[in-house]
Image 1: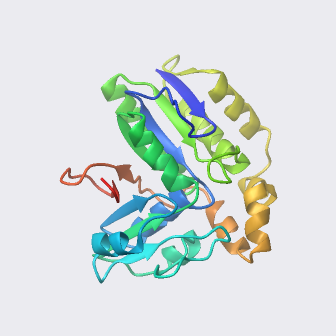
Image 2: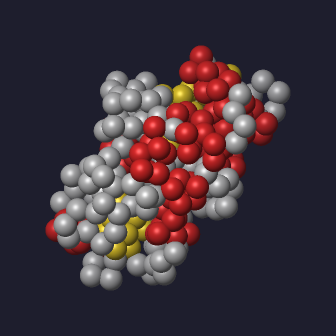
Image 3: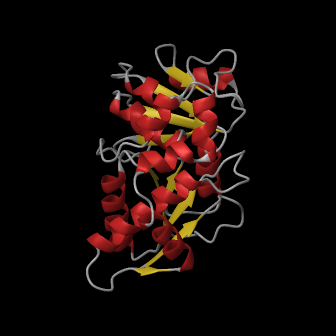
Length: 254
């Protein structure tokens, strides 16, 4: 099986039929894991400018809706900013949630649009779990794997933290796969090489452009939360409504 990395979710993505892992470390995919860890039954995701009324209708009055403006604060009518550390402290047992971010949720929408066979959501916090799940799914489907990095600045620039996470996932694939079961393309080799040259996740995240911006907005605790590895075994899966799976993520406009 071939392992590929897309450093940005820009079209066209050669992912039709692939098992994909979307990564947005300092926001969406870490926040999605946090929502399920907090007990949410299902999560809806939308684009950056998601409609507040549609979001509220999807989750119901007892649910929560989370979105951000360019400075990270929640738009009018939304309950919370998509802060992973904040969301992890909520009690969402039996409740639905909705999430919209500037980079991660549009990347998820792009992966659906480009025809991925299966979309998993990965972060440092569920690193081992998402790697094992992706490898098992790709093996059973006889499919390749593409890790899609969300990037920054509305998906327009590569994000070091996403590339770092992608490289760690590639490392896990190499450790878990037997013999020559995986073949890294150049993009996966590049991400892997960058990752093994780094000292620690927290240093990478805090020194990244996104990390520095969050520190400047008094959100350093969020960056540090996102840097913690393997604190969750949850693997959110993007699926269609009516299809049963654990930790389902639905498109708000589907």
